[in-house]
Amino acid sequence: MLHIKCPHCGMRSQNEFSYGGDATIKRPELGKEISDQDWDNFVYNRKSLRGKHWELWQHLSGCRQWIKVQRDTATHEIFKTLKANEEIS
Amino acid sequence: MQKYSVFSLVKNALSNHENWDLAWKDPTPKKEYDVVIIGGGGHGLATAYYLAKEHNITNVAIIEKGWIGGGNVGRNTTIIRSNYMHDDNALFSEFGMDLWRRMSQDLNYNVMFSPRGIINLAHSDAQMNTYARRGNSMRLNGIDAVLLNREEVREIIPMADFSENVRFPIFGGLMQPSAGTARHDAVAWGYARQADDMGVDIIQNCEVIGFDVSAGKINGVRTSRGEIKAKKIGLCVAGSTNILAEKLNMTLPIETHLLQACVSEPVKPVLDKVVTFGAGHFYISQSDKGEMVMGGDLDGYNSYAQRGNLPTLQHVLTEGIAMMPFLSKLKMLRTWGGIMDMSMDGSPIIDKTHIEGLYLNCGWCYGGFKATPASGWTFAHTIAQDRVHELNAGYSLNRFNTGHLLDEKGLGTKTWIS
Image (cartoon, rainbow over all chains, first blue to last red; front, side):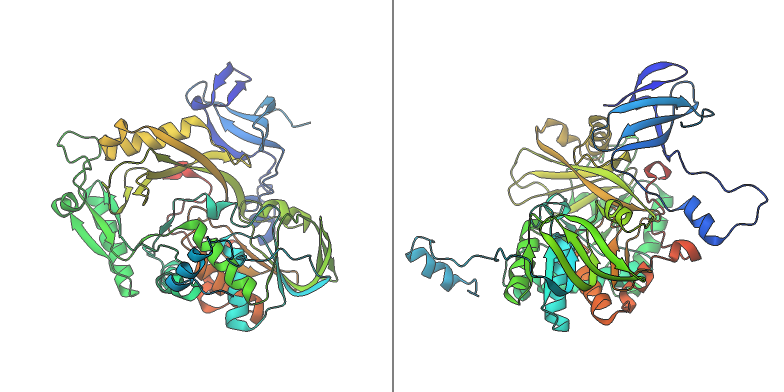
């Protein structure tokens, strides 16, 4: 069982959260002309790193906020959590 | 090579089974091969076997980081089926079913193929309608499909919950009678033994460190046991595809996730079909040893852990008990996890890449084991002829770019969509 520290609510069990995938993917700017490849990269292509991975989780059964979590995908160690609007440094 | 038969068994019994040939050798890697296959799992071994058998290419090496058959081919729930609706999946899988039926003879190795049938349970009228549609599509493609009503299902699997007041009553099911199971390790070993006999070098404990690519062409691979040159390299490393893709500066439509399976303590024969729960994701069969073999959803987040987490197991087994209440009385014998290539549309990729001589076989999601022979056969064709076969034309890498997704269930990495 993972324990995730929600930046709004504190330490909670994994059961309260829903997973949202890679947090470093940025949506192409609205209204800007982009190539199919850029769109492909945004929608489908993922690095899926082994090791430290920034990812989105939603505290679905809690405050319902989306948060960013830095987790090791091999050991499941969680290093850091951020609010959704905080930039990954 | 010594042929396995009842006569060789008797003969070797007389010498206390001390004189059997090694099933495959342990060669030192050569400097150069015509083809290098990375990954000594079911798909990699099958690819090497069909390269030699169908295309006469025998100067081939399989390089494997650990030991052959130690990944997902040794960790799955052994289900073999072709109950797909979309043509690309149906024709590919049914081609594989033919290979499965002949496999024990072809490989001279008993893979214990057991075509016992699979039943997908339906729990609503709407689901019966979609099953009728899928069943009809299957039959149009020459695949056997039978739509069962509630009473017909009850006759086949009376141990399922047919009581009146359940959350997900059984309305009926879709059965593919020719589907079944096989002995998964035997598949890997059988392919390995035959490939080795035809001249393929199976090189274990050999990790890929990097690739030698110049001017858009692959020239070889750098490994923990030295550099190996090859004009053609095939990647068959489901679960580690993203790790090797990174070494090639490729980003693929794949996330790496963890899928668990488990077996109960062995019990007397109770279930002679593969059964799947239609209101969630749970599947079950009984092994020859008597264990109930069960599996279900992904853990749900990117993982390379090869080890599962209990909340998912609890969720999956809750579905199992809803479907077959007697399961609650069984003790769990063993649980394990394997890492999956989850492609974004839930279908695999067998294709060439933008690098000349580099071929990709990945994205098998939940269904890699049953695809082993067809995957090896089509991947061998793709490598040998440098073009995809019509059977794997739908499994292209650029379908995500062009929008020709193969969304059989539309699940991919997002399990919660179902």
